[in-house]
Image (cartoon, rainbow, N blue to C red; front, side, top):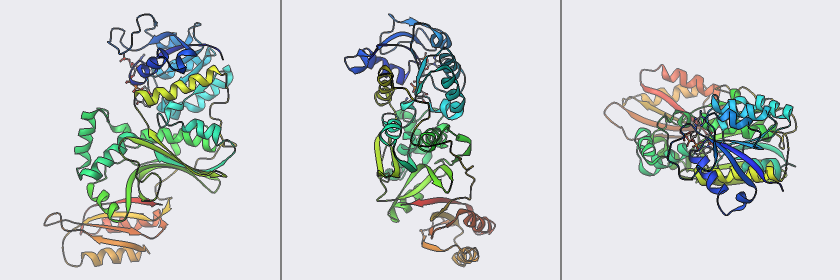
Length: 423
Ligand SMILES: NC(=O)c1ccc[n+]([C@@H]2O[C@H](COP(=O)([O-])OP(=O)(O)OC[C@H]3O[C@@H](n4cnc5c(N)ncnc54)[C@H](OP(=O)(O)O)[C@@H]3O)[C@@H](O)[C@H]2O)c1
């Protein structure tokens, strides 16, 4: 085992967590020597003393420094300094360890090519599900398996919001504001609540499970902004839970990837993963179903994953960037709306007047929508009655046609909300 000289760019939540491990008493301290650091503001007060370390204003200069073996990128962002510095490190023949899922989802193919050309490695355990070692589970423990699907709750902010809405009956906006106060959500929460962050992580998992590189553009994304307490309450009534499910699965010779709110059956391993926790479920042959649950973010869990990658590199354990059980480059199917086949949950708000239910059921029958359950809730006010229903398994495209016709009826107060069901 050799002592690695590392440069760390980004001294925020994860960077500070890593330096605590590097300067602590644990296994990382005996395999790495931090020789240089970079962040945006030299004068910022930090939790760990960095005054004995060489400071670099420009992370690109640190990445190219002849004094380091490994460049650790903990700045974040798909472009800008993080990308420039990672490229510079790879071109200089340095290994890279990063927690940056946005960078890998957007530029994974290009960076993998650079790494191969210059004999460098990229390690990224911390980029997916924080402290859960899912990349290692897929690449090493499951190397002999044929993966059929990888799914999970990959965004702690969304899971926290949905759990709080479920438990307290408060609206999305109220719970988001609380999550921001508690530090569970960013001031600009759009990357999280739109599903994009979970999508970045899913595209990395897909690359390893099915054969890389990441293909974020073919992924279908839906966020949690339209979810209301009535949906969570109705799901519970149906014996289900609403989760922002990220899922990549084989469909014929293609891989279909989506991130969307989904009603999970109560026996699904993710249904009761609550709060800011993350979870990943892998279905594979011959291992069967595996579930991993743990902290998806935070200084300690994320630094644990970065440190694990550094310790692996110190053992000189090298392999191609997106290698895993996937055999060859997979064909990711552009995941258009309408392509799924599933049971569905539908929430309608309609005018409280005679004949309304008949109009709904006639329209659904005309489009051969077979109803599994139908629930009319008490009126919310003089003009609005919520109705929730679930369908038998059907093509989403056919349901869209029924919903389009329903939406044209004057009884409809707002557009319908749809979510797939999954057991
Ligand atoms: N936080 C988590 O729990 C978590 C979990 C999993 C993955 N990640 C990923 O880990 C990475 C870091 O996240 P974080 O939460 O630690 O971020 P953070 O707390 O916002 O810290 C970012 C760091 O980058 C530095 N920085 C910003 N622009 C820079 C530039 N142009 N040059 C050099 N340094 C620059 C900042 O400097 P100053 O300190 O001087 O402002 C700061 O130290 C991101 O890719 C994130 O997605 C985070």
